[in-house]
Structure formats: C-alpha cells, structure tokens
Amino acid sequence: MTNVVEFNHVSKSFKDFSLKDVTFSIKKGYITGFIGSNGAGKSTTIKLLMNLLKKDSGDITIFGLDQNKYNQEIKSRIGFVYDENCFYDTLTIKELRKIIAPMYPKWNDDLFYKYVDQFRLPEKQQVKSFSKGMKMKLAIVFAISHDPEFIVMDEPTSGLDPVFRREILEILHEIMLDEQKTIFFSTHITTDLDRIADYITYIHKGQILFSKEREELLAEYGIVKGKNDLLDRDTEKEFVSIRKTGVGFEALTSNVKKTMNLFGDEVLIEKPSLEDIMYYTDKGNLSCTH
Ligand SMILES: Nc1ncnc2c1ncn2[C@@H]1O[C@H](COP(=O)(O)OP(=O)(O)OP(=O)(O)O)[C@@H](O)[C@H]1O
Image (cartoon, rainbow, N blue to C red):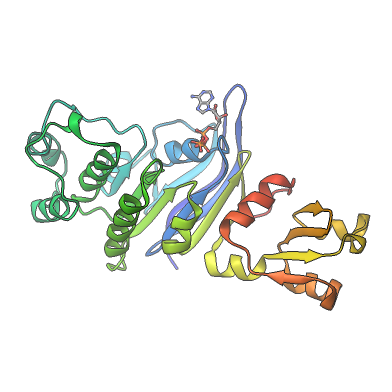
C-alpha cells in the first residue's frame, strides 16, 4: 500500500509544548481522521505537513518527495482547508474565482460550479454575508476545484450544525469514489469519523499514540464492566484507564483477547466508540506506542 505522507521522527518545540518524535503515515486512497484533545498538537502537525512551520528535526515526505525540495509541486497537488481560512470578504464567489482559479494549473471550472451548486452557495452575494457553515463550504469548494490528489483539512466540521456537517461528509465521500484520492482531516467530532474514516491517527500531548485502521482499532479495544473486587494493583495495569463507581468499574482495554483470558465471564465487554477510546486514553497515562 502506498503512503501519500510519511512523517519520520519529526520533532518541533515551542516554549511550553513539544511534538516529540512523530512517526506515522497517511495511506493513499483512504480517509484518515486525526484526533486528539485540545492542545494535543493537531494543528501543529498539519502546519508541519503543509510546510507552514519549520520542523526542528526529522523528515517529512509527501507523494514520495522531500517536502522542502519539492515544496511548490507538492502544494499544487494538495487541497488545503484550515480553520482560519480568510477570503477578501467584500468580494463575491465569482470575483474570488477570478483571483484564485489562475493560481492552479489544474483548475476545473466544471467541478467548481458543480460544487457551488451542490452546496447552494449564492454566487453574487458578498462573502461577508455568509454564515460560518457557508464560509466553510466555500473554503472546501476552492480547495477541491483544482482536482487535488490529496485533501488536508484542519477541523472542517467544527462549529457546524449536523445538516451542514452531513453535507460536507457527503462531498468527501463522493470525492473518495475516485480511489486515487486521499483525505486527512482533524476533528473533535468522533461521530463524523465513525461515518467516513478508514484510518484513525491519535495524538496525545505531542506524541502519536496510534495510527490504525478504524475497524482494527474497534476490534482491539473494548469497554470492560465488572465488580470492583476484581481490581487490584496487577489487574488495574491491564487497562488504559478505569472509572470506578459505587456499583462497579468501567474500563478501557486495548487488548480485548487478553482481557477475556484474564477475567473470563466475570466481566462484560462491550464494543467502544471512538469517543470512548479518546476519553479513556486521555484520562489514563499511556506510554507512546506506534
Ligand atoms: N506558534 C506557537 N508558539 C508557541 N506555542 C504554540 C504555537 N503554536 C502552537 N503552540 C502550542 O502548541 C500546543 C499545541 O497546539 P495545537 O494548535 O497544535 O493543538 P491542537 O491539537 O490543534 O488543539 P485544538 O484542538 O484546541 O485546536 C498548544 O499548547 C499551543 O499553545
């Protein structure tokens, strides 16, 4: 399987935060969701990927090309949407198109007007009158109308209502019908990922905890419920983290098979949601594994 992106031992330090030895890849032809709590390092990773920020060490290759040597070529093959997208908002869509389209050799007007239509965006209205959701749709339309092979988005669905979010996910799904395309996007809305993500990359305090196929992840992890007297110093180590209540405990295991062997019928094991995995992993203090 080809990788569109490879991060190899990438580090970046700010005064109060570091991305540490970040190693992961993004598979061609799939949607990868990038999750992690506030301040975990998602935007920083995306800025490094887009070469908007200089790494301290490590390598990043995109389309198999060195990020610095082939910066221009790489950028022309990526559609990028980020949360601070700013347009000259006194302009209309038509006027913006006149400025943006010539920047891309592979600009596709048919595609552009198809998406403008599909998202029901008014062409003759100043962008400053658009709602937040309409502005995000417009950013996506501009990012995908030069037919990029790889689409990178920093929280494209944040702050949008379920109807807007669903429409955006549908467009992403439609784009993925072309098996040569790849999408990487960060989000806090794990239910969006339940809908469309093939792979999940999880960052926690500047470290990648895992980058895995979603199905594989959901098969390996489990929510375990049992009586508190099953817990002692040794058995507690088996869990990512544990929540104890008056009636028993609920915990996350990252190895369902091992937990079943250990506790047998004494516990109940349920399928976790991505949100469960995020919640318990953030709560616990897992060491870094790739
Ligand atoms: N230019 C910078 N200078 C100093 N610190 C920075 C800079 N950019 C980011 N940081 C810090 O790095 C940490 C990670 O920020 P980042 O924006 O990557 O997190 P995030 O996972 O995208 O968070 P959120 O989900 O809240 O958007 C934060 O503590 C932030 O304050």
